[in-house]
Image (cartoon, rainbow, N blue to C red):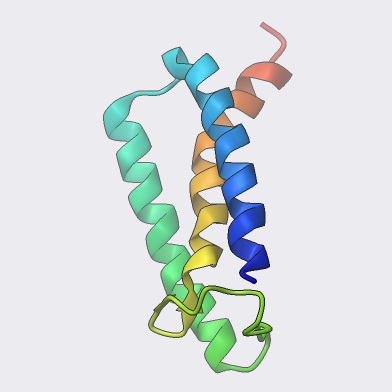
Length: 95
């Protein structure tokens, strides 16, 4: 069973609901540019750390879909980071 996919799906749904509630914080172009940068860096560095044998994945817990050698599930964290950062900034600001 693809445990990482289930966990990522749950986190993405919760993040998506939160992002929808705070949708006025997002500027479309900034969001897309940020997503492009973060996903690109994730693609680069995830592949490097996997190729360097720093991390490894239990194949029974992932779907098997990969971008080069990085499991597709790893990219959910990049998406969540881009969506949650403006929300956390707003919730922790003093104004």
